[in-house]
Image (cartoon, rainbow, N blue to C red):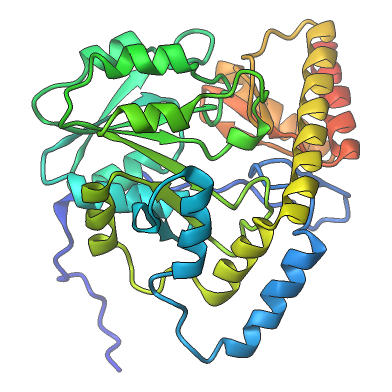
Length: 363
């Protein structure tokens, strides 16, 4: 084995300015009881039947998974009213987003998205030689769709819409998206990333099924990581029109969706599991409303979140607020000098968030 440093290895120039993904900070093990509210994870473990199915599937762990994931794609196709071949699976919706970039974006091609939004977007784009066109959010943490439409050029290959937006929380309406799509060239793909869809108020959630049927350049991104509590198993999918679905199947990593992940996803789609998941979603929505109302009473003016999180636009004070919370037992996610995101977690953690936010204002 060589002890020589690999200083002469030629890396792609695209990596030189690539930002590193910053995961949610784990809770430190220093004797202080801490709640982790930094990663938008579910406060609930997987449903018992889902966990049991995943564990049982380990009996076949010596075999490769079904690369086509046919059974899962058939169920998901039925759920979305499309052919199974229009479902593209990978290791979480972030991996499907990466597949989209690989399928669509060449050296120097542009990808338009709001900023700040999902941390992985500029990494996925830049790692494949694409150019990130980051359109600032409105002062209320919302997508500025007019500015995003104006940012589209002949080099644009993909637009990413994150709704509800991570980390700020506001969502897009059906009318807003339809109006935006009328301004997007038909050869530009618009990906609607709905990782947090299940936490949205059902009465006003984006009508993506109709949008997908009406627009051949729309692709939908979904995940089992959030409400279903399968973040550690890594599985997500896209609903795409046939040509793009075929392209996604060409560029995705073979056997990406593991046997336990496919099995757990299927089990979570069973009617009994769906009923329990709906109850969990309602609990999280109620907790989010309770937290936001309490914070408003304290004088906070926060974006109107439809995700399983709330966002504090604290600017230069972001790091200090995160440290203030950490010292009191709550780990949050700070975003530089922009803001701090707090996941709706266990009730005790949510109570602590309210207490900490109040103490911060009273300093």
